[in-house]
Length: 95
Image (cartoon, rainbow, N blue to C red; front, side, top):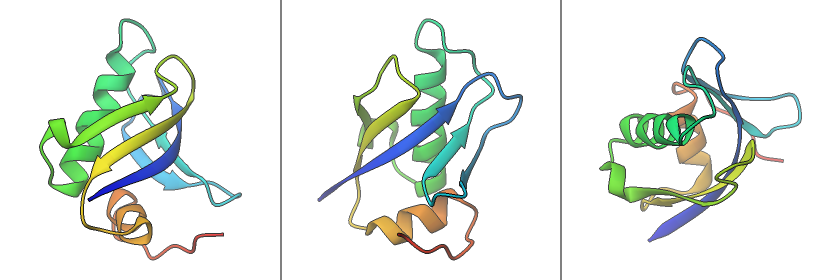
C-alpha cells in the first residue's frame, strides 16, 4: 500500500526536521542545499529513517526541482500516523 503526501521543503536551513506549519501543511527543513539533488536525497533519507522504511520505499513523484513536493511512501500507515511519526510523535490534526 502506498501513501501520497505533499511536503513543503526548506533547503539549506541548518537543521533536518519536520513540522506542521500554521496552515496545517507538512514542512521539512533540510541541511542540504538545493543543488545536484542533495536536498531531495536528504528528504528521502529523513522520511525513510523516521518511518523505519528502506530508502527505496520513498520516492518524489512531483516537484523534484520545486519546494513543494508530492512524495510517495510505501507504507500501511495512514496520513495522520505518518505526520505524527515525521513530526516527532506530536499528535496533529489534518485540516
